[in-house]
Image 1 (spheres, helix red, strand yellow):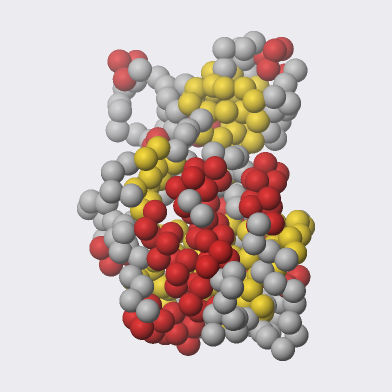
Image 2: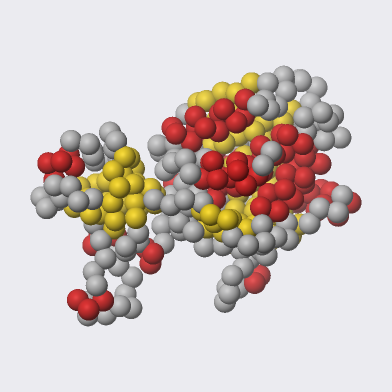
Length: 335
């Protein structure tokens, strides 16, 4: 697998929470290369690496398929599109951003930006209600192709940076999907201690909804949520950030299984796989929170890829961290 090529292919498909159809089609085809069975349901996409073996426990490797974005909520008489956020968008970066409205056809636009010469202050963060999208179309022209509820995504392409780093608009959490796909590739000819199930869940950004459905549907014995975490840039709290290129961050939290956390750490040490530790004081704000309380409870952990500029159109990861994550997961799943 070419992790850069796969990352770019996934990040440039659009799947804003609640409307992940395009990404589901793309990732389902990718899963079919590795899995004996692939299914699509309300919760997302699941792929069973091999036929079910009742003598083995079930291990879910979960990454969410959706991305943050916006939703159309009004079209003004002047032909401007009003919108709301879907997921935790950083409002500071919205003015002047190029976007795509996914209506009956894709319509490009730009979020309006008031020149600083015409404002009283440039220190305030603009409320989303005050922003509009300019497409160049009239209201009548827009209404022929745009409906209330249509999703809006940032109009951005992936790019290579230096030193194995890349940037794009949906690395959260498409890089987690790539890590799991790479894991399946590494496990192809290995003996396993689990029934390995890849889960690419919907609607994580609006409350881990897909994972809740699929946790109940699959009822795993062990689950690992493969997501992203904060990559240190400059000025952040180092205790809360990972370092790009130094491996995935293994979660430790009161809401996670300490046994699984320690097993992952021991595997990383014994196999010389770079890793880091992420300590969280409560819930993880990932799909792990849904799996851990499913039915009678599930042994759950997080393995997170450090990412800079989270929830922006220019998220940055190090491709080496995808490889490190996949190696760690593969060793955990294999005998």
